[in-house]
Length: 114
Length: 116
Image (cartoon, rainbow over all chains, first blue to last red; front, side, top):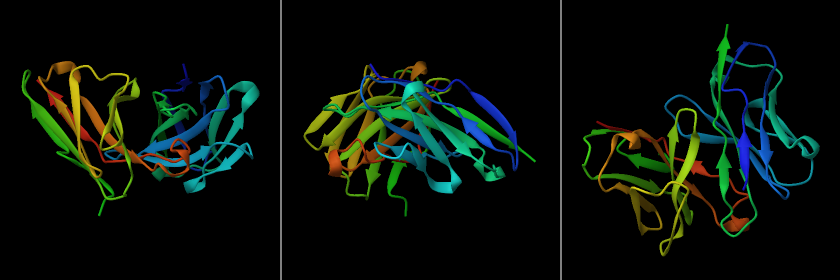
């Protein structure tokens, strides 16, 4: 069965500092990987996704993620965090089976301090 | 206007009551999903539908039922609400084109349900 681990439930960074949110997945084949962001009171919005090809993926809002098969990881990064980035971030893994199930991690809540 | 809408946005009800949460979409997508979100548990899939005649249980379907009234409408019902169904509920859609999974899911704003 596929699974996703986000080891950090809560992270605090200073505005302007760099950010890395960790995500590890478990899946037997090449996974489909996603990062979503949930702002307070909102639904989830896709930041970026990986299916194949270049392992460094660029997304919206200046975010990027790198797929590392050897580490089963898909960490999200941003070089300089803005106060508006404060939100909850979800990593997700999808399979290539008949249903094409997507499994979400428990989320990492990002706090940005001035 | 929002592409995926959910009604109501907030609902407080009592144990044993029947509740319906509604979802409508204007994206023209075939696939629709219902999730619940609980702190520390992320999003868990309740039901999903690939078209009007194709409805499937997710990982936590007990105590819930759904109806796909049209391509654009997907309703979630709690036949007899209980307190541990207190959660944030999300509807989502995705496009069948390209195989489905490599397309993002578009989420509604959520319905916060409290069962007393």
